[in-house]
Length: 614
Image (tube, rainbow, N blue to C red; front, side, top):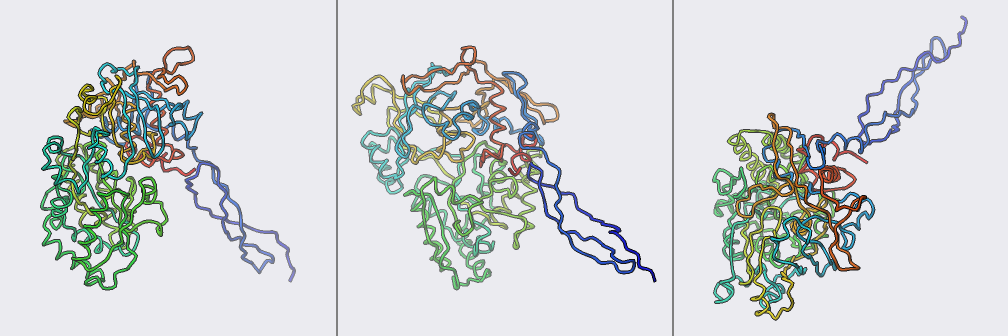
């Protein structure tokens, strides 16, 4: 029989289409099989490694051009949304969408927010920032409404200890302070301090979050037990003493779609006798009857504060007395703490339970259950995932429900959907333990006329000081009307695109204007940079018309003067729609690493670009 010599007869390789998150062509090694016939009758199958180059996808810069924001002209900006959202004018005014100076950021990089470099457009300018000590703002004489700003200077200290701040207040070194918990009884009976003491509603909720992937709190029964064992009413009555309301759900009573006080939602949060019995049952069912076998390394962490410490110790005692377990209490300085509780912190470095407060960015539930806890579109510090072995199906339902509620146009239907989302969040998933709804508890001097802390921060430009009365009482001199204020902690940033905490947001409120703002009393959206806006019939396109008299300014550290920034022709450089477009795209650019970018996912292709790899 003759032998025929054959070359390779065939090499059939099937490679699946590659969907790559990266923007550049990517080489991927694939193990493939080739059939090699070396004799007419003896086929031999061999394995071979080949390199496949996937075609390049769009770059981040190309994708940014598809984001639904564009400057129609210098003073008209248009947004295209993923779905209708009647609350969008509120989002358009948030700090992450406020105009920032592109040319300064590109030149100075991370240092652009330092005094002497920073360029702003709000009622105040930053003239000094001694980190971890104090920050100084001075009135912007070129602010479009400068004639209505009476306070000319803000000297902001950074005192974490409430007791120290209280001593400074009583020594007339601060015009305003939040009273320490241990002084509440004394303040209420003091003939002077009681007249300076005020309580008013707040748009914030105090809660404990659970890192749901870290044992033993990976078990929802454990999380439910820990939440149910908290004596919320006694906490607010005997520790806080500021008229706070025990919380049974996440969203504050001032928020559209809230279920605060609804007996259908987490009834054991409001009935402590029921809560104690449920807590014991759930912990036993989870495998820790009467606390037996409970791990010794479980940590509750809070940011350094005397008030947070007292709350943590009270709840630690609840858990010990009701459940027979010990939970270790630890604290960290604010900036370090914010990094520790991120959802990308290695699990071994994350606490089991963390403390946070959430205040409204706008008064709609979309800003609460969705933007904070949605596992795929929210900040998700609790690390919720549809892959959860216990309640993955409930988490998937929660994800889909909060997305659908944001797109729903019928207010009644939205309320019902948010009620179901809250029940999932606090009862079945138990990702967090709602503790209480804040009030603003405040002491301020009789010479200070102040407003409430509105959504988006304090509006110091609307406050006034009887300067002659202050000088007479404190011995202050000069003619510069000065507010002495305590920020409480070092602001982690003055960059609107990077701010995630109330201290940083309060800084940005003084320095940068948004398209819209909020009325401190009604919380209604009001014009700021925008003079008017309208929405298309299908609810997808919002057009904002802007003022043409807002200019960029900087503080000259050499001359000690506030100066207008000039354009190439020597004219004052105005804030335009192009600055808005840049700011929105910069926040959504994943290279900016904005933790708050998700609030802009409602904008077309916002989520798509922000979640790209680079």
